Image (cartoon, rainbow, N blue to C red):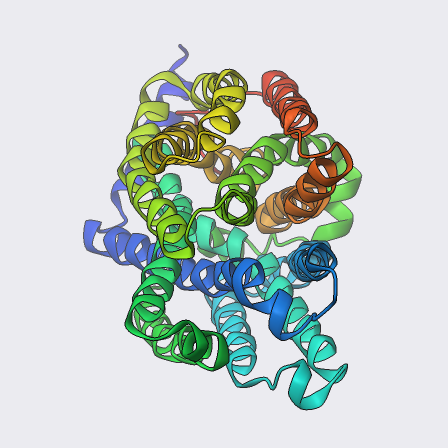
Length: 443
């Protein structure tokens, strides 16, 4: 190694140590808390779409039609997430990560509270599903901008040798948000009659989210702008139109990001949304299903932190691809175990699938995408790839799976084939990407 390279590495190390540990911790906590609240609000809709919304907002003589209409509104939010990603990432790359995250958290909180106050179909007719859909689209816009900023709040504050671990922390917001929603829904479901829960009890977690949003805003307000963005401000090197520069010079990385997202998003919503309706159709009680998903989501939390740490030791690509291969090997046993109609078998299926296997690549996706783009268009590039991947596969996944099972007379084999293809797409995408684990983030 040349002396200039050694001096450069030393300079980068010095810059890293200039960030106080207390400031890093605040950023990490702010990233995790905000991400958890955003995902709680977002997943609450997914849980209720399987339990409440089909009956309350999309009544029909055909239960399957009601269910599919409810899942369709769930999917619609994913289609608008790339637009939210473009809008808010432009702001994030131009004026800062912190201000953008305040906007997205406020928008998500407002739309969620309004859902809890919305009259149902029996009260205001066709206006009910229309307004519900509008509010769901607001959630999609907010999450489209939140995810990239939340990850960057952690990753851009991270020490180089702990970047995988730091990047995994905001990703745990997905499973913690899912768990929090299931805890509250399960407690409410157990503490009141079925009639009361269906009538008004389901509204409580939506309206109550305003408290969580206020806590999240207070915590994030104590966090400063990220070191990477401060460098951009100091050098006045921000991209005038980040989306234009991203598509003109970094379109390959965007395609890789889309491909990497496919397995992570399709399998997460397999476990978090589709499995709920699938198990209900197989005779499981709602409370039992929610408890299974809750426990498995909590298992995923330490597993994600472990895989983030592991990626700092052996590289992101090895962990991501290894997890994707493990998923392909597990998906047939997964459905077979669910079909045994046993609580123990179902717990094993979801525990291994969501708690362990999904955690491996779920923990990687944020850091992997952040490392793929330069700082001046990082928010835009990673948000665009992530949200397009989610829109193409994640949102439609429960709807696609429901339609395939209905068309093929209850057989889950077509769903398995679809998911294996998703995993193969991601393996190829990540396989051709450059592994930048351990390299300076802003070079």
